Length: 128
Image 1 (spheres, one colour):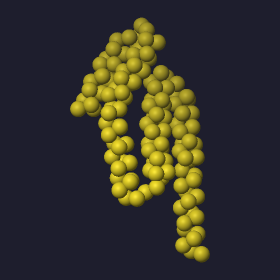
Image 2: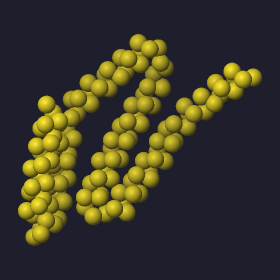
Image 3: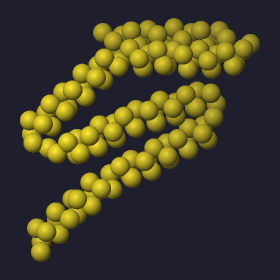
Image 4: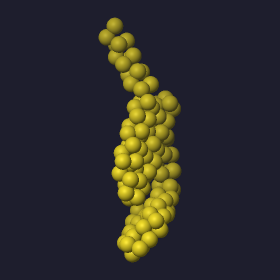
């Protein structure tokens, strides 16, 4: 149901932006930002529920907490980076959106590096 509310908020925001953009583009950008933020906030309950379920599955499977926490951090970074990039693109700053996406990729690589090292270490120990 939250997806329907988020969709309605975004459609209403888009309609308002279409009306405002020719005369007041700065207000249209603000409305788009506010509508996007409101739509994102409607999904926070679902996000909390999903995080709880992922952590419960990880604990049941016996995964180390550092591994599934890294996964959740990567998901959170991806969502935040995508949201920020879309806001910049909507504001006409596609170069900034590209820089956000690049920074996001670098952050995800840095986050994954310890896990990759652990996997490689495990492979070496199996071979040797």
